[in-house]
Amino acid sequence: MANTFKLKTDTAVGTSLATAYTVPSSTTTVVIGCVLANTHATAQIKADMQIVTAATSGENGDDVYIIKNLPIPTGASFEVIEGKMVLQVGDVIKFKSDTASALDVALSVLEQGP
Image (cartoon, rainbow, N blue to C red):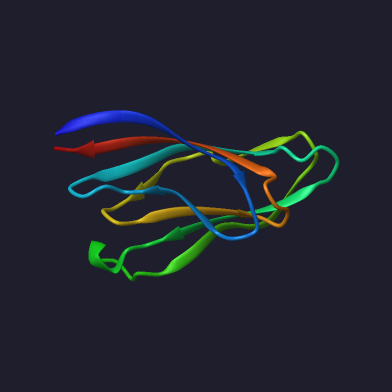
């Protein structure tokens, strides 16, 4: 089984939930870090991070928020994941800001697959 470290990024996330990462087929993913940054020039933003669990992974198929309406000051960042989180095939990580094009995301993952 191959282990591959990857960095997934998304820039200018806006006011609709945007998919930043989907676990590929035949893969288990360990999320090892996630940093959110407010790129708005003058305003604080509020950010959401949601995990959508694929029903096909044998789990509940629930949509759960890891953070909801997290305030991030102008020019600041926030580390969301301080531990580890395991995701299965088809699970999705999404992000949203309450301000258009004001959130950048850096997601570090370890993919374990064939």
